[in-house]
Length: 392
Image (tube, rainbow, N blue to C red; front, side, top):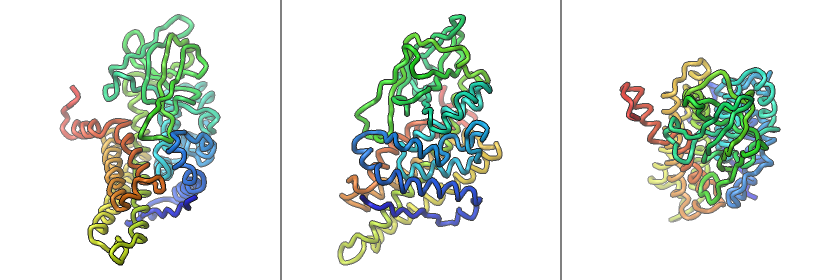
């Protein structure tokens, strides 16, 4: 079994801007990834199986709702701590980070922000501990970048709601205990509903034959006349802005996570370039390889400071949707390019499961699409700077 020799790059001394708590939280997550994720992740990806044994460890390092208040079972950490945890987990694997992102930003966040006190007390402690795993139902077979067109609907039946429809590309759905589902009422207004496994008519078929996020469980949510108790409606926010607020939190975590994937690819390529001998010297001695490596560390450094600043703004409650979109788009694109360049440095060895690079590259092909595609995020920035929507 290959030893995890990862050393995190910090070319501009970002650590100097972090608190001791930030570093303790990050280092705990980093050590857990080295100990629990790295030894098993290549086999999990090859076998296309989500390693469920990691769920308890994710809970232990505070990856489930790190910023959720302690009174609801969370760690009560700030947004930079949340980002650093996501960075370290995605350094291990994007699919494992997806599980944590969904649990934190797409399930716990809406229950905390949009739910009532009874819902918070009922669900959040169990989600924080990993006793419950959740998923988030927004994307549909016919509606991805246009979620306002959703067809999933619910009717008021007097003593309950009747839910019908389907969601697609849902991380965690095959084993989730609850789903936060977004659907339209009879007036066409979007609301969030908590749907529990075991409710009659609710099924979660798994999606197979993926080339990306192979160590993550992806599936559908099918609602066939599902009776949802009225107390499961999230009462404190409705409209499209409600699920989009959750996506802001998830996209923020992804911006940090992508840096982790990029750092792992860079670290692997740098180490290999120093050890691989061709023409009588390490390939790191050749100009073209140094160009690749120098550009990688430059882009990682830029992304680190972009995202750290975004974390400061988020802690202050000043981060905008457009700023989060910019960071998500930039960092995932950066990570994907670094994965591809790193693969070239490793040559043929880069396509094997002996190294993490090809797995990261395949995973990032999903990350660049989910939580808003590469192009959609560009248009969000375009709208912000011009005031003109390209969506209508």
